[in-house]
Structure formats: structure tokens, C-alpha cells
Image (cartoon, rainbow, N blue to C red; front, top):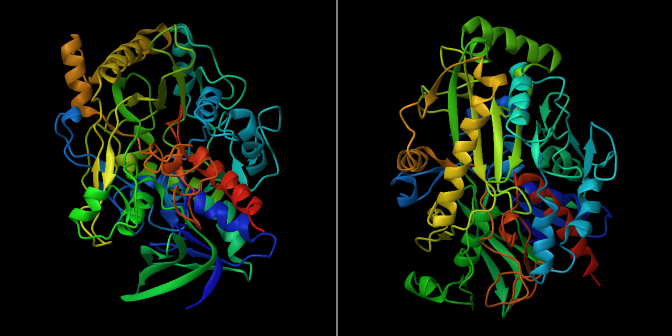
Length: 538
């Protein structure tokens, strides 16, 4: 059995950063265990290729949530990355940090060092922003962020104009001075290729002699001597193997896999573990609890002007954009499907936005089985204005079903389970229609296709968004951070309460969800977490 200074479970958004930062000095040896395989795949590297990875078991865990009463009984599809780079290798690449108030609330909840002013240096240091450096933006960091303002579909300008006509300011940078308004999204790509955490951080680290990455290695439990984590047991090629950690074991499996591994290791709700025959090493009711997620819906319109549907649907269009991408690394395939978006408040008295907008210059009303139909849009000129809630009050949980590490855990999202979440979503979908009714958009809209003009009453609108909403893939808080062991899983230094030599460093530690996409904050958590680990080494 080999011994390493650090064992990192998961090579995703946070784990990749940890591998890079902990090995950089050459002082420490690092083992990374990744349940999936390589990220060197065409549809992973091509930005719009994530439509192909949406259901692909070769790179995706393909989790399913439990049937959800809040979603009209629907069973939601939960893609999670199962490859180098984790979900940063299959996500939509929108680069949003979150609101200043989000992180200040984390600090105010008893987590020193996690306020916005504390974290801004980390965000700036890890970033190489094409738009240039300023008070809020960094250049020269490992992760390149692309400014898409020159590349978006022409229809995007009409969306931005309509948003302004509806009362929102034009925002040139959602990660700048303020978050509210409409604008064009920056994305984590470089030269037309996805800039995953693996590409930015893990690949450079893998060139070092003190880093070892084991792929297709499913961690099955953390090994302990007393209350101290000393290693990890894992399955690889049908064999059970073990590796020893001289300093720390770090779980970076994300909001599904980190609580699952803790529970399999005897750390979690005592009744659950006892009922499954798992000896309780350390009881903590918070492991897997407090699940928060963003839930979204699209309003889709038939237009009078060409959209990407006319380019991406016919065979000759696919051929043209394919040639454009291969020869110049540009065009629709080099972008996210979300060209633009924004943030707004459903209550003017609120201090920060509670809703996020997405604009897509194509539509996929007619589904195609087996893939997310990004590359097979509708046969008419369509586009969508989508939205998702930012900080819903509904809470769910992720709990193991059995002691078998191969069994997927039970994901209970509890979407729209509070009146507050239903009321804000009702106000939000009405605002989407308001944007669509503004002159800049109304003059080019033939008809609203989904949900359609017959859906007008509050009851019908609520029924519609319950039926058609789904996760936007931002689960957090299942190993949440906090100073009080009775309410949290890790402390503000990301050490698991009540145990030694064990940390969780990924999006599962978020005390609350953030205003926007979670990937940038997950990568920042890896960066900040590495600083904390290194500070604590004697």
C-alpha cells in the first residue's frame, strides 16, 4: 500500500485545483482518485458538445432524483461529471461568481475568511479574463474566461434591448461592480475549447513527479484509525485497493458523492447508517441534508427572423458550422447555448437579485431521445428566454440507499416545497412575458409556443412551471460549512467536525446557494481550500 501526503477523492472543479495547488511546491505528494475516465474526448472539448454528454454514461453519472411532488411528480435527470474535470467538463460554461451579499452572508453566519472581500483575491488570481483586469477581474491566472460579446447571435441584441425596455439596466459584467441587469455571459473557454478545471489545473499538475492520478477508481470508504482519517479504500478494475494518507484525506466528489462517501464511511445520520448495517463512526445528522438547488424553466417563442435553428438543424448547416469550428475554433459550436442572460428582483424591496435569466437563440421543443437536443433544434425559427431561482428556500437531501458504494444515493430535491418559492417563480415567469412583450422582441415574435397563450391564470402558470421546471444542475450544501457541529458538517477551515485528517472541499460545503451558476464558486472553493490546507501543514 502506497502512502501519499494527500489523497483527493474526485478530480472535479475543486479537486483539480487542489491537486495543482497542493503539489506546486514539490514538498507534498498527492494522489487523486477519479471514478471516471479521461476528458480527452471531442464532445467534451467542443463547447456546444455538452449536448452529447448530457446522457452519456461514459462521462456522466446520470443520476435521477426521486419523483418530486413539487415538479408535478416528475423524475428529474441529474447529470454529474464522471471524468477528469468532473462537472466542469460537461457543464454550460457560464462564468458567474455569485453576489457580494452571498459570500458576506457566509461570513456573517460564523465562517471567517469567506466574505466577498476575503474571496475576491482568489477569484482574481485563478482567472485569466479576456476582457482585461480591473478592480474585480484578474488576468494571468490558470483559467481563461472568454468575452463573447462579439460572437453572440444577432438576436441577442434584441433580447438586451427588450430587457432594458422592461426596466433592467444593461450590465457589461455580472462579476463586476453589480450583478443586476441584462448582459452577455462570459464563459470558461479558451480559443474555442472548453476551459475545464482539468485543463486549467489538473493537466499541468499531472506533469509533476509528485502527483498521481488514478482513473476509473471508485472510492468506497475512508479508512480511519480511531477518529483520524488515514486512507481511502477504492475499487479499480474489479480489485479492491487501498491508499494511505500521511497528512489528510480530502473529499472533492461534489454535492452527491461527498455526502455519499461520508455516509458509506460511517459518518452521517445515525438512524440511516444503523438501518443499513453501517457501523456509526461519527453521528452527524447534517451529512446529506440541507440540499439546495436552482430550478429553472424556459419560455419558448416562434420568431419571424432566422435563429440558430436554421443553421444547426439542416445537414448542410451542421456541416458548415462543423467546418467553421474545426478550421477556426469559432462559430456556434465554440459557445455556450446561453449567449446572454441577466439577474433581476421579483421584489423591488430586496437587496439583491433572486432570479437569473438565460437567452438562447434556438429552441428545442421537439425532443430527441437519448440526447439533449442542442444539436437538433426545431424546424422553425425559435428562441427561448429561460430563468431559474437563485436562492430558493426549499430544502432536500441526498442519502445512501444501501451499504453498496455502487448503488446511487436517493436524491430528494423537494422543489417548490415552500410558498415563497412558488410565489417568486410566479412573479418571475410573468416578468419573462413582460420582456417578450417589449417592442424590441414583440415585433419579431410570431407566437409563444411554450407554455402558450392559453396559459394566463396564476393557477395555470403555477401548474405549468411545476410540470416543466427542472434542475439547472447547481446542487450545494449537503456537507455545509458552519461553526456549530449540530448544524454543519465542516468547520470554516473545511475540516469535518469531530474528526481529524479529513476535509470536504467542493460545492457541498456552501452554507447557502449563491446568486448564479455555481462552477466559478466551486473552483474558488478549491483554491481557498488549498490555502487553508497549506496553512495548516507543520
